[in-house]
Length: 330
Image 1 (cartoon, helix red, strand yellow):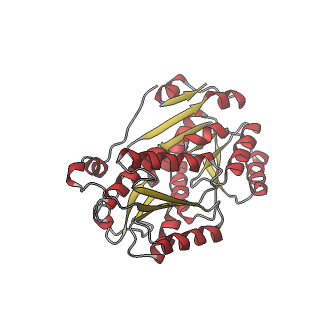
Image 2: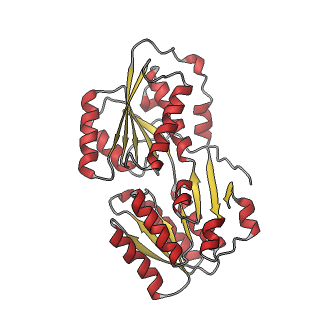
Image 3: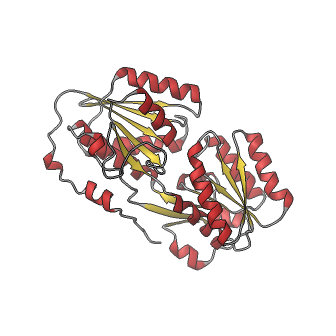
């Protein structure tokens, strides 16, 4: 098994800035808000918050001593997300960390003064969050997690793992318009393979049942891509269980989905993204202006294969593909 890292020029430059140039934390307790669209009970989102806390602790910020973190979870409820956002802005924290393009945009509409650090935004320029990667401007900077070309990689890996796949369901949550970036990239890659793609918007368990039925009932040789951002934990579990029941090879962006039954994952280490965000919050708390901090790119990507799921769906993973994986789960 190998570890492979993607190091961007900007990320490397940002990470290399000497900490000695920053003033040390004073005795004032700083307040940092964290906005998540997910559920607090979802291990995926709990892991992200834990990684963020660990990152700040490594920089010398200790909760209860010089730091307080106010984390709000939206549980994929738009009204609740808005309420959490309003309450946090009212508290006027020293910085707010927010996940996803849509939440970041809503937060920008509510404050032009509180520093905002976004995480897991695919293309911050395309979605209008910043004016430039090198110098974002305003009160916003952050860590981009994906770019359109990676979506084509999901389809390529799926096809390499299961060469028989001729039709792929693109399962996505239509509540998040940003996933259009990935859908378009997958469809472009599919035309060259060639593979037929089927868009399958899902909000509920019933939608998931219907999406799987469409792939299975029409023609054989189907597959599935879980397009980010991730949906609710219960729906993800159902999606992969049904896919495996019908022997549909699947791929997702996050390795946490492997434990829910996904065959493969390829994408940035989500926890590491939040540790990168912690380094930027640290700089902001020490006096840096967010608009002058360049947007960072992921520094670590992971390719994970579940041989357990492969066996369940009757798929033999070629040794050459297994050799490329960062982690192979038996």
